[in-house]
Length: 420
Length: 210
Image (cartoon, rainbow over all chains, first blue to last red; front, side):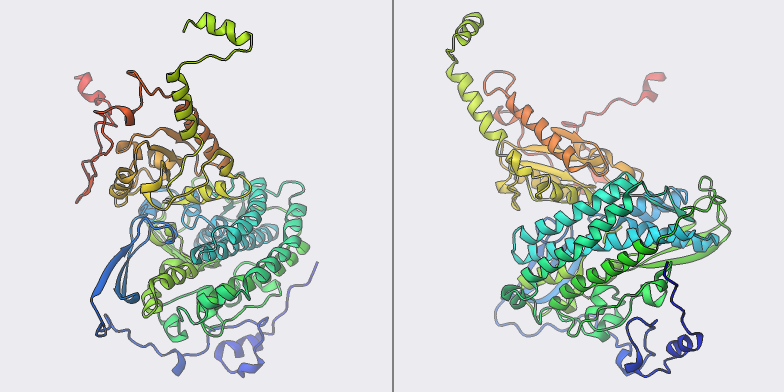
């Protein structure tokens, strides 16, 4: 058993108030957003920038909703000057499944399976965010073992998401199959572990308010240990194949640059924000769950282009493996759910709560208002990929339509979450 | 030919058939083993569809690995995911653009009936209100093995099709439609909300009781 890290309270306070020299900050220390300075001033965005004088005629193309590269049913109306994008207007709603309205008609427990279907790559992270919001609302405590299981499942989900994303991104660039095949080979191993634990491959529905649904099956930890120990080999393989690949570098360097000011102003979170060089990871900032016990670093990008966003995913997978190794080493015995929690007829007190986690795509939050009944009065989801998508036009302007496809691919959207 | 004689000859190692039977066998055998699906994902089930086409489940074993982005080159539409009312006209239009013979697999609870989102205001309660569905695959989402089983079921359906006579399939009947009317995304609901040709529905029990 490793001892939880002991942070000095005064040091924390100094960090939070910004009285620390920047070079003293190391990535393992708790971080907070720098105080608003000139770098982060809110700059009002022009409503519709003037279209420059085109050389020839402008062409308006509707890309989607049936398009092989748009990651689902997403449509963008693009105005092209030759091959260069002058304007881009996203059109949403082709997968609007009324999650929030259904959430108001369903009990608190009944909403848990719906959260699986939001971002269908990362169902266990979604479960955690929702459980966290309800636990805040009702003031529940989670047993130690359940916290460890949550970290393990969430980080495995991050591995699934990032490896699939790298595969899909390369698929968009024209590498038909190979990286995606490798990614799905690893994904299947992790999904086998999920299936052994929860009974489902994708829609896990495993976390509960105040813990987890069932204890781990025998031998599960060894299975996960094998997966985690072999995972760095897969990352090395991907890096050897891709990271210095001439074609990948030619396609991604300097493409779709997201300036840090714009990223902060638009509310972009997750790997896209960190690729622009901003040190903001909710696992470090909020330190929800037990993330303060693990040693890991937050990778940061320099330029904020598509290559940096690709590299963020690779580096975050390496950090996730570190977290998983520590969690698998330290996981204690004990109950996985607070026996006093009554899941059926669960009725939290009147109030409101916002629970958020660092999902693989960014900050995933659930905002709940309770009026003391069995169903939430308001159930609002803050989806990361929807808000990351708002800067798509700024990133795409001036690039070709073929580049827009990979810029969209690097944003990492899942339409179930964007349209809800 | 007399079936008894044919049986007798086959016992002696002599294979007999008719031209029509041979033609039927060859035509169906060729079609069933090279179904080209439309590369068309709607929601969660699309990920399992992709997983089915990857190395572990390997849909290529059944000749259906050539996912075509264009409906003009596809034989099979796998409706993989929730069909919303905004998306339904486009799904029907894509189906109309596919050349005959064409087949539809409804994959997952949402495509069959609306699934867990059935109570919602924006979800179509099953794609078979607008399209003739050949195979339904239940599950949320169905496992890749289930998709493969659905594909094999469809292959068996194709294998049994006649090319002459009254039982010939839809695409060989001259009067049968190969296009279906595209609904409009209306103000409150799809307009019309269903296609009575493929979804006759049943009369409300309320009227019978009175």
